[in-house]
Amino acid sequence: MPNFVKLNEDEVKALEKNPTQYNGEVLEQPQTEGSRKLYIESYGCQMNFSDSEIVASILSKEGFSTTTSLEDADLVLVNTCSIREKAEQTVRKRLEHFNHAKKNKPSMKVGVLGCMAERLKHQFLEEEKIVDMVVGPDAYKDLPNLVAEIDEGRDAVNVILSKEETYGDVSPVRLNSNGVTAFVSITRGCDNMCTFCVVPFTRGRERSRDPKSILEEVDALAQQGYKEVTLLGQNVDSYLWYGGGLKKDFDKASEMQKATAVNFAQLLSMVAKAHPHVRIRFSTSNPQDMTLDVIDAMAAHENICKYIHLPVQSGSNRILKKMNRLHTREEYMALIDNILERIPDCAISQDMIAGFPTETEEDHQDTLSLMEYVKYDFGFMFAYSERPGTLAAKKMEDDVPLETKKRRLSEIIHLQQKHGLYRMEQFVGKTVEILIEGDSKKSSDQWMGRNSQNAVAVFPKGDEKVGDTVMVYIEDCTSATLIGRRSID
Image (cartoon, rainbow, N blue to C red; front, side):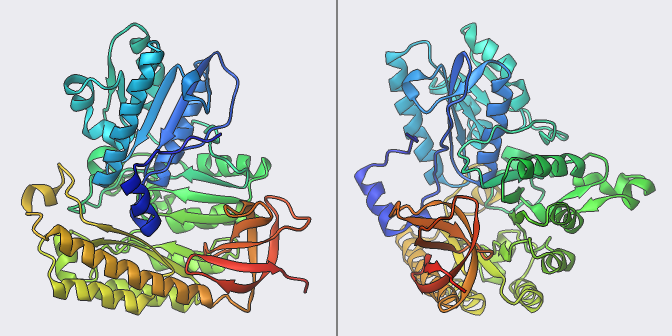
């Protein structure tokens, strides 16, 4: 059985009321062979889930196999997220649970990976003493040495950020795999210093992975029968390979390096051309870095899904400037216009923050009006939470009252639900192509899959199987799900 986060009663009620506010998930794991058992949970963004697959691969070479049973585990790792306070609170509850489990199995070791490890290393090891090992996102290749340290009874830590590490030479162990969809990381780190975000401090500067290794990984996935690949990065549009090194140092590259450099649009086309029968997705994009050649590449290749996650965070130019988002409301809207002109049926989703410091009612109304302009298909919406170490935390007072944040967030969510339903209704009465990913969560008699626009669809089972692409006639919908039947045409 998979392992899931245990929530208290209030958290369960909050999740049922508004699933978009919950940001924690746990990675399911297949049972694999090995003399020592690794139990790993992952929280937060897709990059963390991809990193957990890298960790499992590195430790498999050290004799560790993954297990779904905490009681059997010799090593427990929690891959953490620091993007919001809620995610950190959830991880701390899990660490308390694991420390309780250690009382029944004293030989069990507990380690923290990822962004919280980078941010809270001293608290975890020295002050609170709740873990044995702390490993930052760029130090996973040092895990064999760190495990040896804790085996000897010593605490182990490596949170040094790298200027080169991309893990391009590590073949991930596919955890939580349905055998249909997979993640392939293409960049690490971020150079966009948004004032609310901890990512540049926990994951370091932007560097890109060799396109050859990316294509090799996609080749391997296609040979294993995977039907969809998502190219991952904190900011995929900043992908730039010129032989290695940080993106910020590109100006120092040789003329030959510059002439043969590969940008994201070119990489996207290379992957799409190499595997025309594999769906290609990507995430996440940054409005200031997305160029028209990326949109043109999407339009040129049928197998590149018609879906872009394009975080905006606010519809107010004043707040965007305070966030250090290097685009304006008008530039963002112009980008949306360009996308829909070239790809009229492209779905677009957003990230939105309610209650950023100094946000006024007028700023909030600007956000709502931007949402009305775009009518996003999906959204990920949160109340602002101050993150220690960020410029916003250092320089700005968190001065929007909690009740005001909650009310504004509620209005944003309500509007997104309205727009989500509107977008889903556009599919009703149409036949769409669905890639089957597994059983519907509500009924084992129905399949669940997604279309190119990332909309979830359910329909009664026939003689299809997981991984098949089928044409489905959409009869009805909710704001989150298309409901249909297999087309007989």
